[in-house]
Length: 151
Image (cartoon, rainbow, N blue to C red; front, side, top):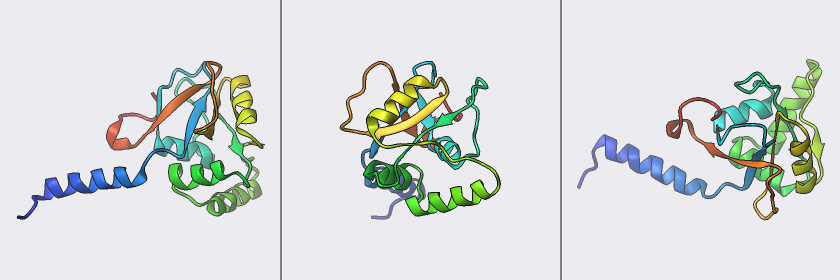
């Protein structure tokens, strides 16, 4: 039995989504940010330093985990689609041009505290970390599931 091209394409999309599995961490924002979701491409642009403002004009303030953190490695590889080494090399080049990488915090608790304290902040924490209402989790979506960058 042969599959039509559209059924085959749908099967490939479903397989790719199931292979990705659950997200390796939760992306969090300051509660002043009205976004409920963020496109994966926007998340990549934020952490690559090319997207610097939210849709309302507020400056985006990303924060990173330590390079020794398993959460950071998983975030880089699974959500940004880049190895930790590739991200570090990217930021070395950007720093040579005068740009600053996101500040680095050493724990989920420090990330949550930093996001809580900065209105334009975005960060990520491990799935096991307990969050309260002082930060908000945003869902990371692929473009085919959403219209627009941040919602």
